[in-house]
Image 1 (spheres, rainbow, N blue to C red):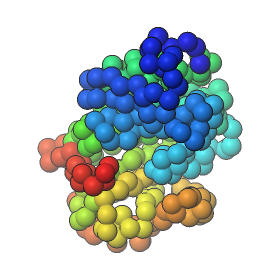
Image 2 (cartoon, rainbow, N blue to C red):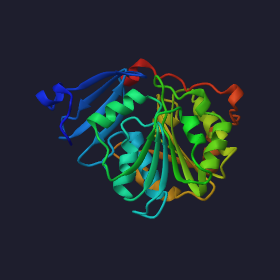
Image 3 (cartoon, rainbow, N blue to C red):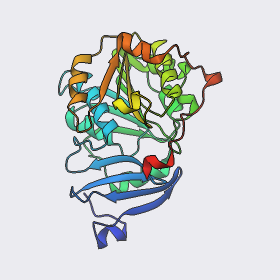
Image 4 (cartoon, rainbow, N blue to C red):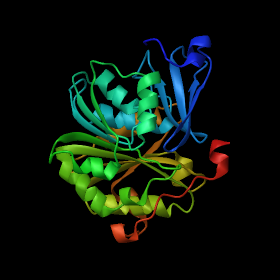
Length: 289
């Protein structure tokens, strides 16, 4: 990494970098176990983890699950066109660049000050084909050409909540428009008991996609605690067996629901239209305690 202009970083690599960005107070905290790895927090909520020496390393549980989806979205190593709604520290864009060289990617991250901070302190590989747009996620999605994306990942949080306009069937219509035939959509969804938001998101996706799968911690699926679930959707059959195997072998094993079991889990929830959409629920304080 090039010489940092931040004097605290020059004094000691162990120092955190703290800056006010558009979305709150951003902190880049060094990972004590990995020499050039950092965790990004916004207002105390962990957002991303990046290892500059090993961008294929995914520390966060939900990002590992999204990594499995990325791995299985196309044959190993094959370049893809990928869109990332929500940038954070560009963890998943770096992962795609490392595991699928020559991929072409677009990252849409509304927080321009955060983008500037991450670019300065955790530079992207200049050879990676990653374009970053500082605009609203749905607005940026609208600029993606029809059928361009092989992979579209939604991981957007504002104040630890996904904005309402990114939770509707109209939003998913835009996702479908941007996806190539056979393309894969994956969304990070946060919810807790009674899981009404998650069920509504599954119902919305079921109204727009033929194939669905959900990856989550069993305790989250049972409504025992707040957490993340990764919703995967496509118009082609998903690699459910391999997703199940990979999720089960993670350090924190996840469960994959699909087919009849996923429909049963949805419990008759209705798809969510723009007019009725609300932001995802705020996590309880204990989640980041």
